[in-house]
Length: 583
Image 1 (cartoon, rainbow, N blue to C red):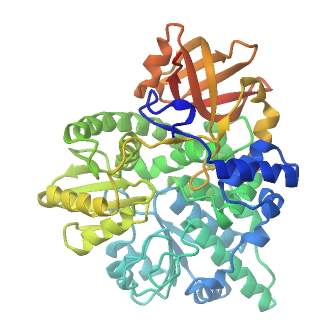
Image 2 (image 1 turned 120 degrees about the vertical axis):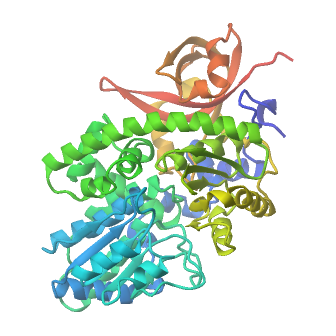
């Protein structure tokens, strides 16, 4: 049954409220624990029993961090890495060009620098070399290094790793593995075929951090001390975890929560400079990591020099950090312009093809490989279906895909590659990359659509909007938001609670920038609330609310604290609205 009777909102969604079972569990938890009801509602939705509520609200890394030795090849990898450190061997770090790869590389580079051992950083160019290790680069690194550590890549790189003959290679990755492992000295990956998948939610930086934990254990066991402070590195792990959209469950929740505290100390020159470039003026949270810092770190790999992000995150120089942050900020602006042009063309093509198919896809001549993933995410959001966007050049196309909950895109892409319809492809459940010959494009997309349909893709319309309850504007105060944040951090796999505000009038509405909308709302009983709707004019929300004509609306979204001029106030991050009907 639709919540508040809203079966079709302005964005075409049905509103769904909490179940009777969750409401009862929340009420019982409040009576047992004395916690605020809003917090109990979040905990009940996440299945936290009342007996574990207070422990859940104060997660301790020591309690949640898994034993690194539970991962195959971990002890072997850590021992070889430690041997290289003790012997002062020449170490190269081969990293992917995204935030997870850059953060993973920075973890190793900073740790090794603190041990007095500089290492070589190698990040492949997205356009010239593509994702992951390639044979020329690995041969070049092997000729002058004793150990190569591949981070956030390498699990499917059989030939490139074989090309590093004579030099040991360690793979620290999280992407879906194939039936056979590459000929590396060690492959540590919770998503190997022979792993149980319990730690499959970790990003690559989480895997790298676990290896450093195991290195520390081995150092302590041999009487060699404990090495650099690992807790001080958690800001990098938190950034990677959020930016890579890893679910905030299990150890990830504790890693991000502690990492945000570390980041708030402003000790890392690169993150300080980047936060200043992004004009962050409040304590960091998951929104900042995912939408302000992450895209800027990614900008180098998307349209600039591929190693800029890793260099920024690993530098100890404030001057270098400022220069790199300014460069990445500029590249991010350029990336947005390129993205907007590709998105408009891709959306038009996808709409012509139909947004109700199991797979939404588009391909265009010269579309920049650095933005196709972001555009795929926008198509996915618009259609609530897996989406693939491909840039064509010459006889090939390079693309990226994004999936929806319950549909494993990475496995389907990997199967296509095994069937010969793709030049190569891989990834994980929610995101994947591919290279396809122009001649096979239509056949590959038809086959992919078929595979995804078998998983249930394309069966529903716009995603339902799940709400945690109804609030009055007067109840939406800073104290309430702070109480709710105790149950965080929120993000992938742990969505922030959404609330409905009923029967509101729009006092003021003004456009902000090209696509955003700011609103001042009241309930006619003395209660008021400010709201911001990002991207409003890319949806039906912007025109309908801007030209409201005095109509009243039910509003839905997430609450956050807005800081301006040193003062704090609550703001509704508006996601949907529905006109009030006087039936």
